Image 1: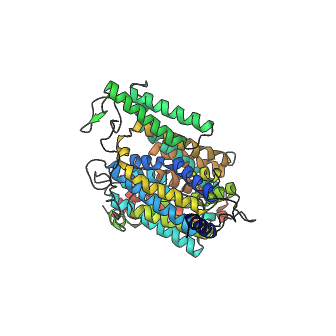
Image 2 (image 1 turned 60 degrees about the vertical axis):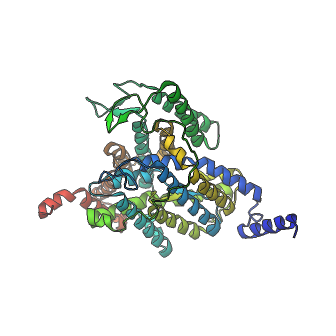
Image 3 (image 1 turned 90 degrees about the vertical axis):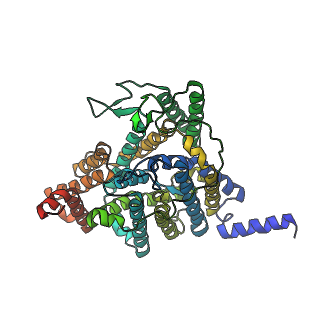
Length: 491
C-alpha cells in the first residue's frame, strides 16, 4: 500500500470515528484547534504547582511529603492527569473539551482543606477522590438534576464570584502587592508603597495580559507568564536581586517571592510522577469527624459539579453542536468523563480536574470533534518533560494570571439580582466572606444558612428544597462544632 493510500485510509478512519466531516470540520482544523486549546490553558501546568505546591498542610509538609516545595513534581503530575483525561474526553465522548486541575478548586483544596489542623495532603486528596465518586454516582443515577435544581442559580453564581475574589487576593498577596502590615490587616506593598523590581515585573505582566486579552490574542495568560519569567531572569542576572526570604525569615522585602529566576542547567528531564496514588481515602474522617468531612466533600462538589454543565453547553453553542433542546451530543459521556477527572485529580494528588472554558479557543480555530482533545492531551503529556522550567517561574510572573482569572470569574456578578434581598444578602455574604475569612467554606456556608433564614422569616419556607434544609443544618453544625463539643464534653 502506498503512503498516499495509507494516509487516505488513516484519514478516513479518523473521519468515521470522530465524525469530522459530519460535523463540518477537517483533520487539519482539529489539529490546529487542539494546539490552540493547549496553548490557551497550558498556564495551568505552571500555575497549579504555585497554588498547591507552595502550601504546607496541617502537619507542616509540602505536597509530596517534603520539607521544601517540589514544583517540578507537581507540574509533571498536573500535566499527566490533564493529558490522560483530555484524551479520554476526546476518544470516549468525542467532544472538543479539555480538562485540567480546576482553578478555584485547587485554591480551596490548598487553603480550605490541606491547611486545616491535623489534615495532610494525602487526606485532602482523598476527599477530592470521594467528591469525584459522589459526582459520578449523581451523574449515573440521574440525581444530578435534583442537586442542580436544589441550589438557587444565583447562589451558585455568588460562589463562583467569591472564589474569583479569593484567588485574586491570593495572587496580589503572593506577588507582594498586598502585604501584612503592623497597624492594619493589609497594606499596599512595603509601607504603603509599591517597591522593588519583582513588583515591576508583576505590573508589566498584568498589563501585558490585559492588553493581549482586549486585543483578542489567544493564549495571552501563557504568553504573559513566559514573557514575565524571561524578564525576571534578565533582571536577576543584571541586578542580583535575590530572594525575599531565607530560612523562613524575610531578609529582603523587595526580593523575589518564591523562586529566584535563573536559567536551569537542564530544561528537559524525565518527569517525576511520585505524586500518583498519594492519597488517603478515609483519613479526613478520622482526623476531622464525619460532619466536617462530609461538608468539605459537599463544598468541593459545589465548586466542581455545576461549572461543567455551563462549560459544556457554552462550548457546544460556540461549535454549533447543540440539539433543539440546547444539549450537546453525548452529554452523559461528557459528564461521566468530567467526574472521573475529579477522581483522577485526587488520585494523582494534583487537585480535582474539570472542564476548561478555554477550550473555546480551539473551537474558534475550527475544532468540532474529540480529535482536537486528543491533540491537546498529547501536548499536555509532552509538556511533562519540561517540568524543570516550572521551578524558575517567580510568583511575580505567574500570579498576574490569578488576578486575570479572578476578573473573569467576577464578571458573573451581573447574574445576581441585587434588588431582591432574599438572594442579594446571601450572595453578598458568600462573596465577601471568602476573601475576608480566607475560607471558601465559610462563604458558602454563610450564604446557604442566611438564605434559609430569610425564607423562613418571610414565611416562604415551603419554597426551600429539602436538600437545602439538610445542607443548611450541616453547615450550622459545622460552624458550631466547637461549642457543641464543649457542651458534650468532647475534646
